[in-house]
Each structure stands twice: as structure tokens, then as C-alpha cells.
Amino acid sequence: MFNISLETAGEIVLRSFLVYAVVLALLRFGGRRELGQVTTTDIVVMILIANAVQNSMVGPDTSLVGGLISAVTLVTTNVIVGRVRVRFPRVQRLLDGASVTVAADGKWIPHALRSVGLTPNDALSQLGSELNDVDQLAWAVVDPNGRLRYKTRAGTLHETPQRVALG
Figure: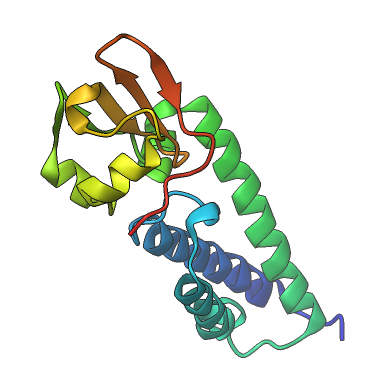
């Protein structure tokens, strides 16, 4: 049960790290900003990915030690990535994304709306009941945390309390 070679342990560490990096990249570039925006189909994909990559992390080793080495590697990698994100803003932008300006000078920016998965009507409905047309906006931005910040032409700054519901 606890008998594992150093070579096998090293291979499990490398495999687990590589799977972590690839799955992180897939989820990051899959278009979701935060887990708060995960749909049912996203959860199904994550469960299936977890099952699909399980063997690629530990290979033929199905021992308790092999599984624990993989788990420790994943948690350690996640802690390191978290610290690197805080220390290096470029890495944070790469992993989390950047704010996207979706409206400027009273007009929607169509390609920006598409990039965050919103239609003009969806975006307008997120702004609250006091706004009923885009021409009332000086600008509107979707932040990496999924919140919509905007400034009215009257000069009032707002931030939606909830994350933007993506279409």
C-alpha cells in the first residue's frame, strides 16, 4: 500500500502538474470568468474532465500513495499559482482576463459585447431600472469578476451587485 518508487512518484508529480496546467488553460479560455457563472453543462464538462484526466495524472499507479501524491501536487500547484497571480499582475490578467468596455459615449461596442457573451438587451437589463437606453451611458465595463461597472452621462458611477448573467 505504501510501496512506491521515487521514479513513479516523480512521474505522478509531473503528470499532475501538466494536467493542472492544461485543464486550467481549457477552463480559462473556455470563456467563463468565475465559477459563479457556471451553468449545468459547464459542471458536467468539469466532472467529465476530472474523470478523463484521472488516469493521465497517476498512470498505471492506483495506490493510495500515488493518489495522495497527485492530490498534494494539485493543491501545491494551486497555491503557487495563487501567489504568482498576486505578485505578477500580467499573470493575473492572463489567468483572470481583463476588463472589457462594452459601451462608450452612449453606444454599445458590438464586438466587446460578443466577447463577454451579452446582447445589447441583456446588458441594458443588467444596468438597473434607472437606465432605459444606452445613450444614457458615458461608459460601461464588464470586469474580470463578472460585475458590470458603468458611469451615466450625468456623472454617476455604479456597479452591479451581482455578476453579469451571460447569455
